[in-house]
Image 1 (tube, rainbow, N blue to C red):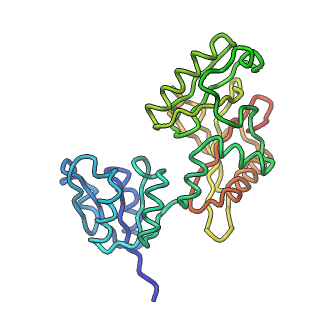
Image 2 (image 1 turned 90 degrees about the vertical axis):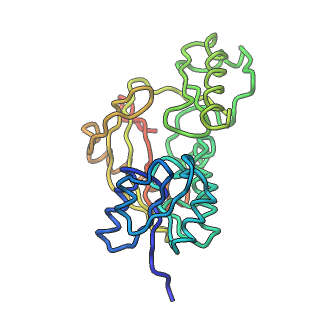
Length: 283
């Protein structure tokens, strides 16, 4: 007999509330988790049940979250966003516990969490990828090699996201110092100091295309949003649809996003991010 769905939300505050409200509308029983400082938080009282995690960092404790799921007889876990939402170890632990992880498969998170691996997948599928290095930069880049690079160029962390570990170099003489700074930030933010080079698109627009995969090989595109208004590589405003995307361009970008998701075996909702240049070429 198929297990009935009971969802534990491994997050807090407004993020958890969005998931809990949707579940209530759909008639899905819910479980909230909370740390000591969140005992009186709204998401705790809004859920059907709540399980204490103890100290402040409980939202990052995989063992405690799985224990909360067992204690409440939850059959699925929704990570929300932030915290462990993009943690492949968490997704794998949920899967191995016999629970449903509401998100991509653990192997997909591992693959797409590494920008170099993502570049390789996209390149092998013939998708448009910016010129750049396909392997991590050596600890010290020889100046002769630096002079062969086309500037301006971005040094980017291979791991993580959120705009961390991205630095601009405008000439060969700047590159060693920029690499060192990007490597240091990447190590502090993600525990991984691998960096690579990627050509910079001048005056680019940042266009995101939403996709969703059903787990049975079907992927559909849900439209795009413009995220070009940023500060320190962090999006401030998202506008949908983008005023810069024509119907013809929308169709091409959507088809590319679907192809990328299929190549990665993507399940659930996700975003394919593009840079759109002044000539209408996207990467």
